[in-house]
Image 1 (cartoon, helix red, strand yellow):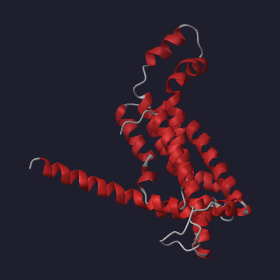
Image 2 (cartoon, rainbow, N blue to C red):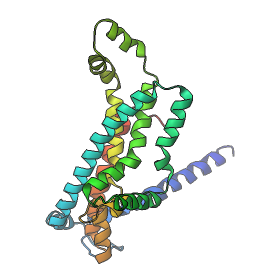
Image 3 (spheres, rainbow, N blue to C red):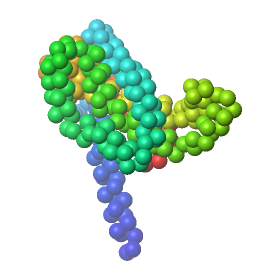
Image 4 (cartoon, one colour):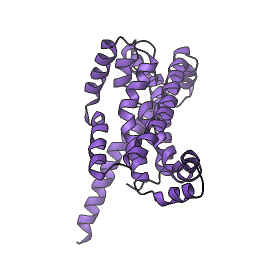
Amino acid sequence: MRDIPTLCWRLFGAVTFLFMLSPLLILVLFAFSDKKLLAFPIPGLTVDWFVKIFGRPEFWVAFQNSMVIVVSVGVASTIIGIMAASALIRLRPRVASISIILLTMSVMLPPLVLALALLSYFTSVGAGLGLPMVILGHLVFTQPFVILIVYARMSKFDLAIVNSARDLGASPLRAYFSVTLPIIRPTIIGAALVAMALSLDDFIITFFTIGGGNTLPTLIWGMLRQGVDPSINVVALILMTLTIGVSIIALRITRYRG
């Protein structure tokens, strides 16, 4: 009798897990369906939809745009995040806490509000919409994550090691590249990958700031407006695979333990 509550909780957990995972499983299944209509039963499996998508020039343009944005956001957020975290650890704890709160305010805003704010700002200063504005917009909400991850690592960093290198004649720059950077490198790489994963699947901010052209998320939106077929699931599957893959690598590199 004592095992009944435990069994009920395990059953509840299994049902919840299946409920959360089933949409992704169905997405993958319909990507290989040989029927145009997304409905059960599925008569057979095929890879023709992958061939169809890979043969569309607009897919490769959207893929290229996504890669340009993601790589740019990863590089820029890493550089800015390192500089910001290096400055924060030298502030008094109270001042550092207030600074972090101010830096992370953009993450607390709803994405739609942030997208509207960015659109209003870019148009008010006369900046044309396009990929550069998308990159700047993505930096607004990805940068806080990089800063927090790098700051959390550097706040536990023993500065005495750097001071010892300085006492031995190393310049500040050499001490940083020979002592500090090798120690925090995994955290930096992981933080950059987190920013890239967030940037890759963003739709709202991209939609408001890209002007013309497409990324993979906005391509899916455009395809949905023309009709629903398994080719949309193929693009979604590619986007999901890239996002989950980058996230797993980032979590493993940063040794995240929840």
